Length: 435
Image (cartoon, rainbow, N blue to C red; front, top):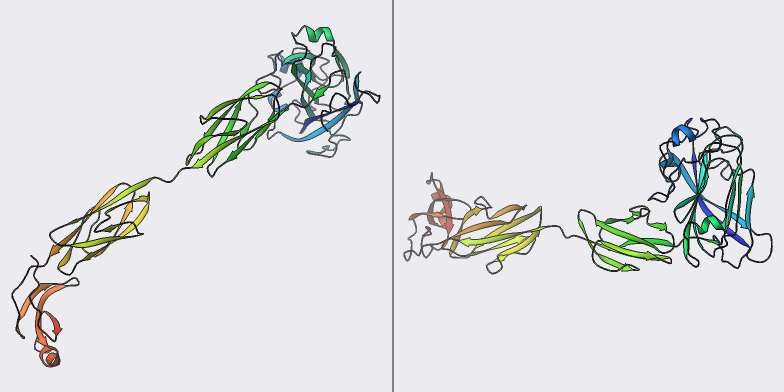
């Protein structure tokens, strides 16, 4: 497994190889510069990658260092593991890895691009070690190599060059102010930039361990993103990151437009969008997002006039009469149907609803009030005689009505040139004008 325990005689280091095409700038184009120091700043950058100095381009033929050790459109990446061995069946001593033909991605990613090997790649390893005071580290190889311990530059072999060596002694590590028993980050950066050689040799007494992972998971039915400070997590898409043991990481949750942040669970707690976790072991934080309910608007119905009736809605919710208000989702189309009682007639819609039909439809894009007018039918005289006429307003039409017995309709209808025929067997109790 990667980063075996201190009692093993091997140590496995898993890092990320990023392959590049021969761009004639950083890769393959530049000629030998020889070993150059000062190409990168002495302190590791906030994103745990080296930061170029103002002489990186002129002295070291480095043009796009930010792309070398991050995933981006210019490269393709995959994990690669190397094994350091102390040459005995017991722990301790010097662990060594040697490869004078270090071409771990031949035929992979962008491929060899017509060459005998894939020469254009970088390799980054991020591990930790518990400081005892006796550690040493030596690297020999080509091309660029930078090593940071506790974020400070300790190996500086920049530029395009033949295999070169640099040793870090225990005294140099002590000068960094390291304290025995504390765990510190170890960050290794390598670049193979030009044909035809690739040497890679490590010797160290450090017991290197993989740093603990911080993992973020999104739960709930809502959506959102989580980002970390220091950088590394952008979840979204990148939800796991390794941090030096003991690192304080602040996570910030940002809900999507139609969601809200509820709170943290797991190894993170609280309801505020930002929380801080100490990564002293592998930890998992859950960020809960809840989908926001769509906004709602209230539709109110008022029955006006001196008559009576009810108004009902489709979809259901209003039955007015009694229940004259209902909240509906923004953009909902609601149909209202007016039903007058037996002693009333429907007089039409006003307010947010218009028209004289019994049904009307209203779009809920704001709070709205519709008024339904019901008119009371006037009381009337006792009886009409057959043959009399009267004016009346019925739900379907109004006009002059003739009261005639049914048995003589065919004979009489020919003599009537105007009005509407109301065929009845018995005269109505009263006429029907509106009060």
